[in-house]
Image (cartoon, rainbow, N blue to C red):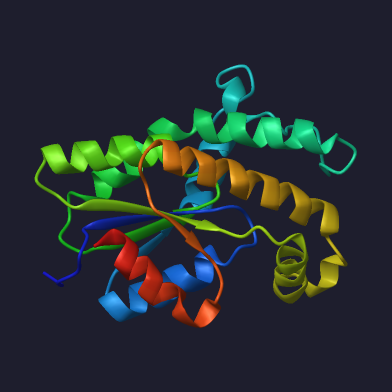
Length: 198
């Protein structure tokens, strides 16, 4: 078994803050497997309908969230994340059946789900850890989107929603006594995540 400080590391944070990039780096350094929770979200939304599971389909029929009020988009995003908490637990439980460490990263990982997964892991004698990345600069997230999706233009409205969601996640993480790590400076982020989960 590869030696890490964790069996499963939950890496939460808003869209566009750099989770995927640092998750890949952490996985490469530790020999861990990366689970992109967005893939799980897409899968469960595909196999359910709004009638079967309305909490997963708040954005159905809304091709572009921009016509919605920012506060409303944030409200729906939080509601979707809350509806996915059991899916987070399912992923963690599955990863704990194997001896390869895993980094699970995604926008819809909530601190409440992470705290519950950590308790379950501890009860099973396994090390589940969680860190939430935080970015409070809308201009930085806008720049991140531009680098990641150069064909999509300037996405300042989307970045504003992301920063507000990042703040909500950070506040919830504090309530659940989970570490919050600032995304910048980028160069030291993996080390600071490591320190946070020790």
